[in-house]
Structure formats: C-alpha cells, structure tokens
Length: 144
Image 1 (cartoon, rainbow, N blue to C red):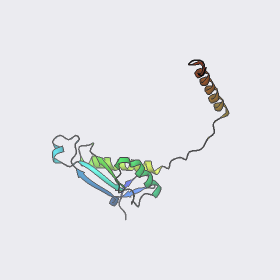
Image 2: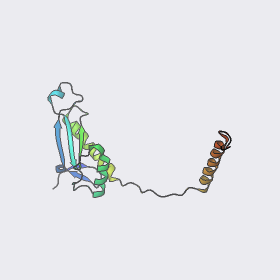
Image 3: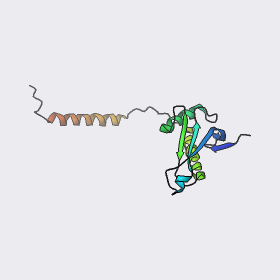
Image 4: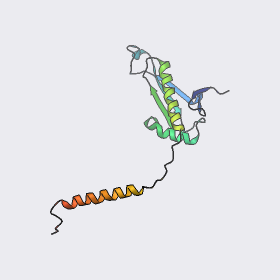
C-alpha cells in the first residue's frame, strides 16, 4: 500500500517518499524561540522525476515554479510564516498542492479571430482623421 502524502487534484496524489522536508531556523515571528528552534520548513519536490505527475503537468509546474525551481528540476518551497513547525509544514504542503493543481489545468488554446467589417471601417476612419490632423500641422506641406 502506498502512503499518499498530498492530494492535489482528484487524479493527482503525490507520494510521501517524493517529498523531502528539512527544518531550519526561521527569521520570522517567534521571539526567543527563533534563536532556539528550527521552525521554518524547506520542502523539496523533484517535479522532473515524479511518478505522480503526467509529463505535461510536470512541464507546466516547472514553468509555474519560476525562481523556486533549481537547475536539477527540484522545486523548493520555504515556509516560515508561523511559529510552529507543524503549521509551517502544512503551509508548505498546501502551497505545493495549489501549484500542482494550477499546473494540472491545461491552458485553453487560442482561437484565431478576424476583425469585423465595422471595426475595419472605424480603424480606417481614425487613420484618415489622424492623417488630416497631421497635415494641418507645420508649414502646410510646402517642401523646400
């Protein structure tokens, strides 16, 4: 039986073994605890080699990750908003699940459209009005 860590969409669930969490000292809220406890979480997920993600979703996810993506295709999410390790851990996992869910939605293809006849006429009328305005400027068009 596979232990499932993260349900991102009804079709995509990431296995616990694919997530790597390290706990580091946070710079955020916590008073003296900041100096003593490692409450911040760095969640690492190898999007390129994940068995849970279809190839198209992995490609979109890596594009969506931006600067959180390393050169090796590993997504690093840092969470240090909260004072406890558990809440930061849940926050990091939730943010990863949101990213995967967003990447799972395929982009809608662009449909080529043609301008209407009325819009073509409006554009040409505007062009002729601008041209007439420019002709009135300067010395009246008498070239030297």
